[in-house]
Structures are given as C-alpha cells and as structure tokens.
Length: 270
Image (tube, rainbow, N blue to C red; front, side, top):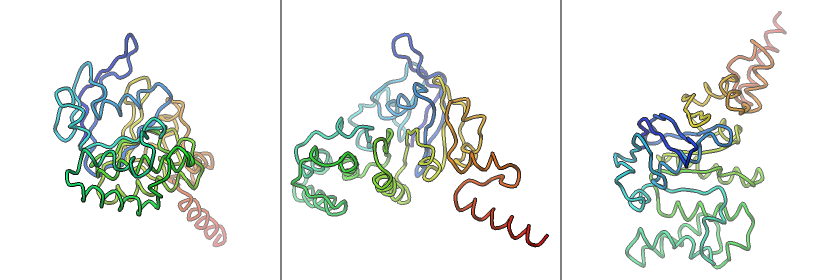
C-alpha cells in the first residue's frame, strides 16, 4: 500500500529525513514513534503527497507521489489531524460529514443516505455546531467525516492528544474495528500505551533516520532502542524489565497476571 524507497527530505537547511526505506502492506496497523523532531509527521505528509521527497520515491498503491496529484491520492487516503479544529470547516456536523461526500458520491440521494447513516452510527445530532461540543467529540466528528468517504488507508497524527481515557478509547476502538475490517492504519503518536494496545508493528525514527522496524512486542520491549530516541516503553513492559528474568516476555496486564499466577503456583509447589 505504501512504500518508501531511499527517501531524503529537507526543509531549508534542516535535514528531516535521510535514506528512509520501508513498506506498509494492506491491512497493517503501523505506529511511528520517536522524539519531537524525529521526522514522524514529515513521514505522514510524504505518504499523502503533501510533501514530495528530495531524493528517492514514495509509492501509494503503486502511484509515485512525485507524479500523482494529491487530490488523486486523497481518494484512497484519509488523514486525521492532531487538532480537529484545523480540520473541521463547516458550521454543522451534518455539513461537515457531507463535505467530503460531495466529492466522492455523485448521486445526491446516495450522498444524503450515507451522511445520515454515519450520523446514526456515531450518534451525532447533525444540526449541532461542531465548535460547540467537547474536544473529544470534535475529534470524533473529524474522524467520522473521513470515514464517511471509506478510505483504504487512514493516517492518524497524534489522534488521542488532549482526550481523556474514555474519549481516547472511543476513538481507538473505532480505528481498531476499521483495521479488523481491512483498513490500513498508519499512526503517529507519543502514547506508548496506545501503541502497545493497538499497533501490530512499530517504526522507530530518530533525527530523520529509521533505526527500528519490527513487531510491536519486539520493539516495545527493546529498552535500549527506545531510550536512544528518548521514548519510554509502556508501563507493563518497563515493569517486566525491572522485575528481571522471571518476567521476560511479559507485555500486557494479562501477561503479568498470568506470570504472577504461575510463579505463585510454582512457589507453593516448592
């Protein structure tokens, strides 16, 4: 679905990406992690053609972003901004969801039906002004407006920033369900708990270079790799590393409870 081939990108005299290569396949759920300035958001904008590589190539569904209009790429890629207020541009939720549908569905009756279905699925009152609802709800509106167009690839730039736990889980559960149904997800985030709970694969960037690419469990338990990017592992992996050999390969709360139970039984038998 997405392929980077030896990509360089600079802004002025700042080198933001250097010789980056990776492939994201259909149905992947990939998180990009790294410190501020590592090149995460640059990578996401190179994916949808908002930025063009200085050297190398980026391909989306076989199309080279250097020679393909971003409007054509937008038929396949949905992009959720970190701040929904930079994405929402209409004065009612109905019009916000209808905005993208106006460009993707020609038949007015089908557009209307699709919009109403999305409103019902998300539980929105279409007459409300999106700027008069909570930050979390605005993020859900922005996401709904993208999903209405049924993109094959969804790029998320810090999708849970500023949300409380309930709002965060509402957003991520929707995204996880989409991935289960085949949507390819690329997520940029600083939240390692979200990475651990939802991503299948992790790319690690530092100073514009790709220094890690692997299974989520493998990357999230590699303390030295994450430390080199000033990123801390999620709480359970870091706790398991602190507890020593008896807790090797403990990755989740469920893993931790299971390992403790095994050790208690082992101690009782001794």
